[in-house]
Image (cartoon, rainbow, N blue to C red; front, side, top):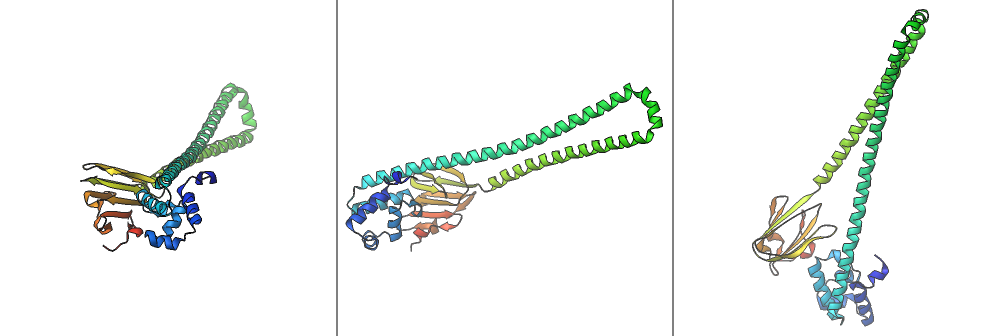
Length: 286
């Protein structure tokens, strides 16, 4: 991300306001009830260590008011940050797809070259055999006497041709085996990639806010309506935040996950990391 772009993000705005007022993290943390490391993260635009956009907005609003800033201005800067992050993720995914496409093209190119070589060798052998037969038929009478007088020389020539043909046939077989091996390796790579895919399914008996993230991006962030369901797939791990968690059912790879142990009874908000367990920042006494 360019330095020019970062100037329009909330971190720069908050940091300059705090330095201007000569405020320290420790005092601000005590007054706001927000850990110092979270205040530092807000000024560094390092929002990944926070629970999610819902909590980031709450922290930004409280921090802005404490520094006598317009909260809406800071939140608008945060929206710009999220928008730019999505653009960067799209560019990254596009580059990954191009790399994969080039890899597949390279494999296809290798297989094509091998097949062309095999066909060329086969045609060469066929033409060579046809030429030998034609020469035998057209010169059979004249060669009869030569074969009688120079039998040993013809035998040596025949053995040489036979050895050459056998060697070429063995080369064709090796090329075919290499082609099969490349195809099998590609199949194994695809299978291994599919084995890393995990699934999340949620059913809702009442309205509740949800947010689902993987290690790269936010997969889902919305107010889920009663009677609806969602189904997501990804590599994981996943961080799942559920408001009014008693209204939701959670399944991970078709196994139902209990939300009771990960729910804060004071806020009725559940936060857990799949497949590990509850979120560290939600380790509060119930």
